[in-house]
Image 1 (cartoon, rainbow, N blue to C red):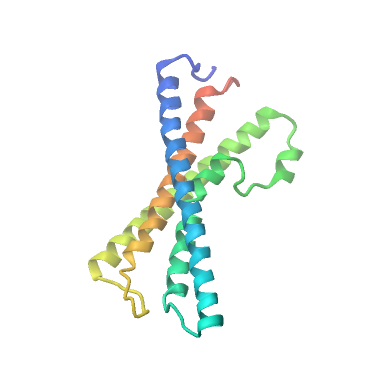
Image 2: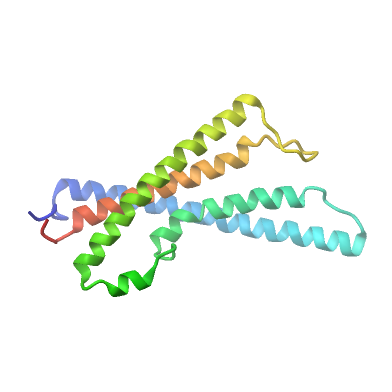
Length: 178
């Protein structure tokens, strides 16, 4: 039995939803790039301040760590979407044809969906606990930790949506026989 044709309503909905996920992924990557620029600027100011003026911002280590979380977690979805996510090519090269590769891709996406859903659930729970208990950083800024944790949860959730969109695209646009 062939999968749904791209001309069917379900396929059109899947394509539209995929476009929304792609747009969110692109926006998250822009935030990731901005975090990279901010982190670079903050570290540069710290290095110049310490080397030339013998003063410190006192927050560069902490804030750079938070920005690293943002750039990492907000870059995950776009890296999957653009094909630059971690992949074991030698396994794909050993498969005999596109059908086998598509099957392996689908199986890996299903496994990734389950694992990422597990992570997202626990990251959101972590954010809730930190907020509820008022957990703060050990630095003098006493940054509420739910704020940087929120980026972890949001980035993982966006990755989850991207994986789901990739799976749906494979199901809806597949022309293989089941």
